[in-house]
Structures are given as C-alpha cells and as structure tokens.
Length: 202
Image 1 (cartoon, rainbow, N blue to C red):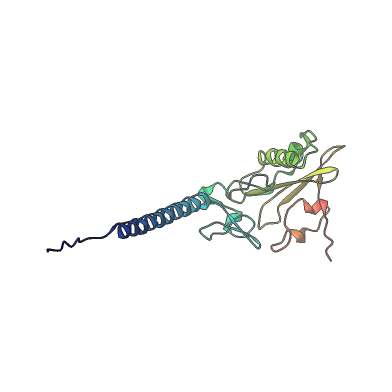
Image 2 (cartoon, rainbow, N blue to C red; image 1 turned 135 degrees about the horizontal axis):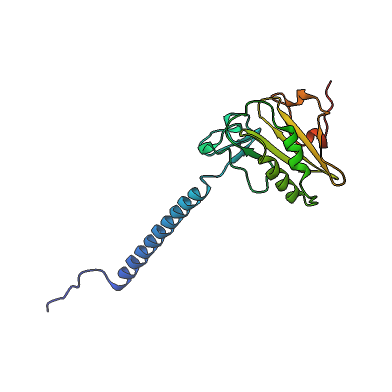
C-alpha cells in the first residue's frame, strides 16, 4: 500500500504567518504615521521664537527682540523682529534713527487718542498712534496703569527716550522726571515703567 504524503504548510501555519504579516504591516503603518506627524509638527513650529532668559532666539539661534543684539535694531528680512499677538512692544523700522525723536509729535499723537479703559485696546491704540510719527529703528511700548496710558518711544542702545502720559482725565503730557542712567545698557531701558513704577537711583 502506497502512502501519500502531503507537503507544505498546514492550516494552522498559514494562520500564524497571516497574523505575523498583519502585525508587521500595522507596525510599519504606525511608524510612518508617527514620522509624518513629526514632520508636520516641525513645519508648523519652524517659525516660532523660543523664549530664553534675557530675550528670545529664533530657531536658527539668532537673537530675537529683547536680547540686546542686532535683532533689537533689525529683524528678519529687514522688517523688524516679529511680535507675538497682544504684545505691546512694537518695533518700527530697521535702523537706528538719526537725530532726536520727535517728542512733540509723539505727545500730539497720544493726546488725540480717545480714552480706552481696556488694557489691550489702549496699548494697541497707543503703539499704533506713535508708530506713525517716529522714524525707523524706534521701539514703541505702551502700558495702561490705574488711571493713565503711558506710551514710550526709544532707540535701543541709546539715551533717546520719549515718555508720554495720557491720563484718563486731562491732557497728555511729556514725562521726563526719571534718571537717564536707567536708559544705559543693562538697565530697564525706555519703557512705561519709568512712569508707572519709578526706580530711585543714587
């Protein structure tokens, strides 16, 4: 009697191979999706500034606004550093201006502003008004105190600083009763604190 021998893999072996192939395929798909997600995340975050002590740096390592470097005077593509939405600090232009800032024009532009009791609205209006009258290279900042809007226009790295106070009631005025040593490198600089939180120097 001749015996018949069946070759190949049985039913159980075929199922096991099918399960292994399915698992490997799933792992490959998950890995591909993960890597694609990383690429999208990197693309979305490539243009963000990264905060660091003493200022910011851009992803390529160049100093950003507030770092005291060249970015304080000139930003990417010559338009000035980007400013995050809601930030009251605005960089106007690319190079330090020649000569003194137009203090009378700054006062007049702030004086024309209607009173806005909301901090965000007042800051935005103050910065926008002053940016129209100052030359390129001027840092414009605004802050709403308890009863006054304070707008400053200064040139980083210099002693050029105009501080204008717009009270809730009354006329806007030029404030100059601060020690100009505060404008020196490493100090607070030309900013609304000069009026809102005065510093005593000796």
